[in-house]
Image (cartoon, rainbow, N blue to C red; front, side, top):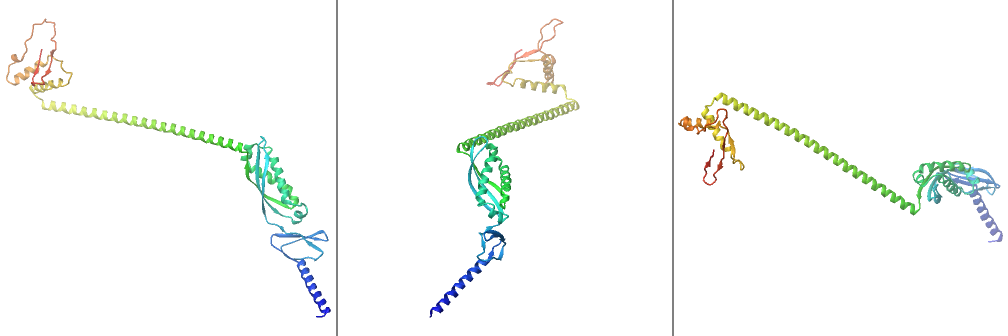
Length: 330
């Protein structure tokens, strides 16, 4: 192969390479939700939209790809001093979105770093007006304050802060230990109060139950006594009516009267008792019933003054447990 052919071949290869490079630098395909800024001769010219775009090679400079989707960035813990001089470390999570690719590229060098530093300073400003207790319980307030400040400051950078969240708040170890002791004491207090309330309620319910039980027992006893009295009244009325209807003989009544006398001495302490003098009338009736005379049944009487009334006759009954005989002494 001659030198001319070699030179032509080299020229063709170089032309193909230049053409390929020109095509590559001319045709740009931008993905969805992405953007690229174009500088022409060192000056901003335009922003490439998603799709296929053409630029002037070697004249236009295509800058790096900018993501237009919402992004999430987590910042490391920032030491912050509260109003009561307690140092806490706060982790934050930031949600943002690039709304203006030109401003995000030309208004700030590194918007991620700028947002991180702005978040730290805003946290110090907000938490400097809150004590530790308010810091731990006012996350929504802190998030709202952070979002407002960051959204205002990052607006000129072409960035919209959609959300700011506090991921963690870490107080010092001594504060955490004191908080745990306080929480434990509060829980023990609530447990003691609940136990006392339960015991009090139990005693009240027990007393109410005993009261109701006593009332019911008293009402039952009252009702039973009433029913028993009514039963005895009816029994006495029935016996009385039966006696008057049957019209028993006095001798029978005297005999029943005498049969009842041994029952009066049936108790262990009933060794001495007084029988009225009318018992002689019963003895006379029994004597006559068995064929005796009235004079035989009458006991001897001593002479008494006319105004002196007869005194009751006293008997002492002793039960003969060995010979089965009973003795009477006047």
